[in-house]
Image (cartoon, rainbow, N blue to C red; front, side, top):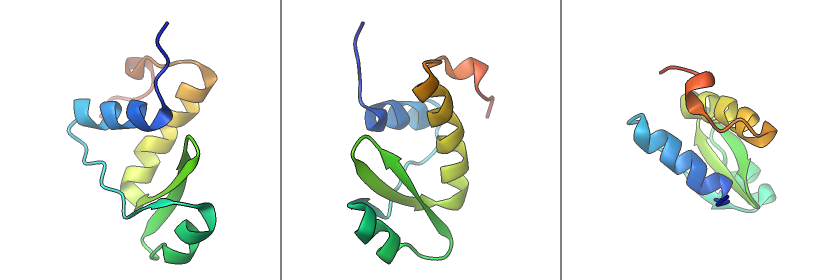
Length: 80
């Protein structure tokens, strides 16, 4: 079994669905929350914190919850 990082899994998930995964910031938790604009959210992938637009956050969060539980089949998660 090949393990890939959460970051790579999210990038692949977004690319396969033609969802832009454009983050505004990648780095420490403190800096992410300090630099976060009002229309963005902070999400942790692996050991980094990302500031992403709110709409992208909702899709990524749902995918991550299932991925962390061990269900990596996106077809059972959501249909975009």
